[in-house]
Amino acid sequence: MVGSASRLRLLTLSCVLIGVFNSPASAQVSMNSFGDDLALLFCSHVLTNDSNAFRNKLREHRLRIRDIYPRIRCNGETMIQFAERHGSTEIGLFIVHSVLHADLQQAGDLSWAQKLPYNHPINSVLRERFESTAPQQ
Image 1 (cartoon, rainbow, N blue to C red):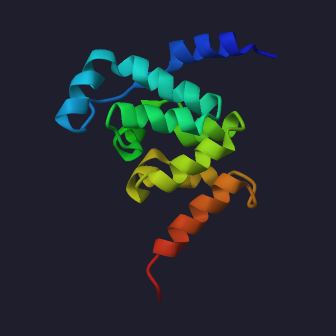
Image 2 (cartoon, helix red, strand yellow; image 1 turned 90 degrees about the vertical axis):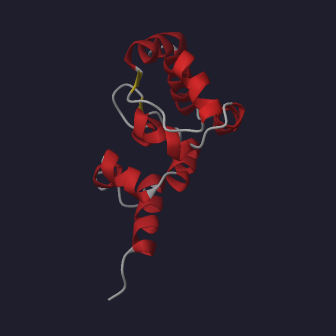
């Protein structure tokens, strides 16, 4: 079993911040100065299923999950995929509820979730979100 220190080191090496943040100017300045560190911090909160610390960090830097979600990858995965792989269901569900539909589709989370068991909590919530917004015939 890989220790949490080894996982964090691996996460440090693999965490990539993609693109420039399109957030408010006050947050953008702080993101430019330590964006990679923040991306690593968000990924570590996902890894440890610490949704309270995740929310607090968002508030502290005046960010919304929908502003950072498309740009952060944790070991090459979206935060939802990373959460599911590490059994961090609570924070995975929080992210699913907080991210825009377009971002979930663009990131490939919807097609990825279809590979999960039908009754998996993340798959269920993703399906519910998209079924509730599907056009009625």
